[in-house]
Amino acid sequence: MCLCLAAVLSTGCNTMSRHKALTLFFDGVPPPKMREAPATPITIPDGDAPPRQTGYREHGPFAAKLCSACHEAGGANALVAPKDELCFRCHELGQERKYVHGPLASGGCLVCHDPHSSRYRYLLVSESDNFCFRCHDRGSMEKIEGHGDPEANCTLCHDAHGSDTKYLLK
Image 1 (tube, rainbow, N blue to C red):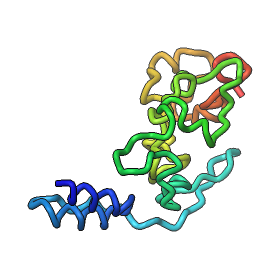
Image 2: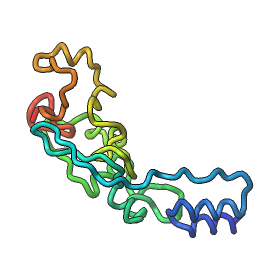
Image 3: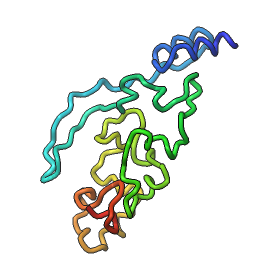
Image 4: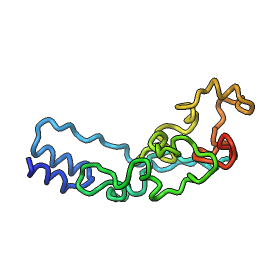
């Protein structure tokens, strides 16, 4: 068993290498989930907002196979910092603002973002159109002045991370 653990740990973050090592010692190891090939970004005009891109993207350290930027060496998937502080080691997201979005304030970046890869811009966990309605009630929002267009992109007026203006207004 020690030999097995050493083989798996020595293979690093490469999915295929880990799969090969595990299949040497265990029967029935399912094949690794293959990712979609990176798509060539396509620019889509979005009104007055900057053009958005679709296609597969990876978080910089993940793409560069710098797993140790976030994970302890040894393959146990332990993080180098507490989960609620990890992203702030590299990203300055305005936590010093007067009003901070709840998930950011609590270090819950993973509520909205995938730490490794995503097919959505900003490594979001789903399409950004109507993204806010994953947590915020659409019916309640539509009753508030200025929210009559249910198809409007929330981030045209609101900053998703934080603001010095109430209601995260820009």
